[in-house]
Length: 66
Image: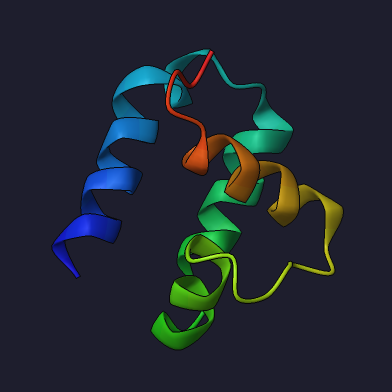
């Protein structure tokens, strides 16, 4: 999905460089999840049980990525 790719690219461009190592690690783990799970998280159909992944999803979905 191009829209989801756009969200991930926006996160990478605006936040990833400034994220701490824990968030970077959680983002790497997030990207290993199956596509249907990623879609569910990014469309707010489901919430991640792992707090670190939930933190990443929250920031990916934020418009300003501050």
